[in-house]
Image (cartoon, rainbow, N blue to C red; front, side, top):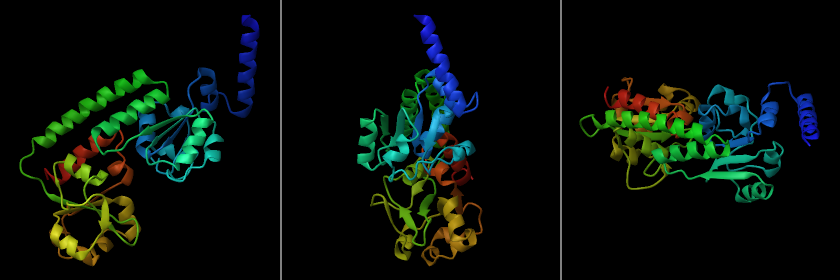
Length: 294
């Protein structure tokens, strides 16, 4: 009984090796039975690498840009415009994504094809990061490693939180500007940017509305931000920091008056700043040190 089983397994592995070199992710997954993963969301993909499960990745979305190795993974497109045909062609065992991934009919097609679909609710909290770690651990069959990673991240988060809370005073007023297009938007409440501002011990210069609104001169004068926070991609898209400050909406703000200061305009990579992945404690600490304790 065992001989045919061994022969069958050996022939299967020989067939796989014809498609990929020995030691490649394809052969390793076939030999170990490790689930094949597709991740949709840069923060989720970062968790896969943090768990050391990158050899199980067979596809990622266009927001999965970190670490650098993620750039070389097959891309499945934008998270809200997924294609069932393209996803199934990668023969995944599991898809891990945020609840904003879709369209829903594509996710239903994946489920019907036997693909495990893990959807993670985003609420811009530390628990969101914990949900990502747990979901990847389940989908990758690495629950024990996920628990160990979460314990390390929790300890780091608590240490950073204690440092933030030890700072005196209300913290500076920060305006987050999303300027990836010709029509910049500013962040109100219940956004990733708003959560980040609060995490670092600062105040959102805008309140009274949820989500994003167009940036207007009247609103900027009323908000009176001390610091403008944005993404590096937005700065690059607009032509650099000097060009950014030329926007007339910013002219009457305290931040504009002190634009010569290195802390008047702060920008970070969009995924690092808003991705809510395992780098979140480090990002919070770095921003807190720069804009609150400076």
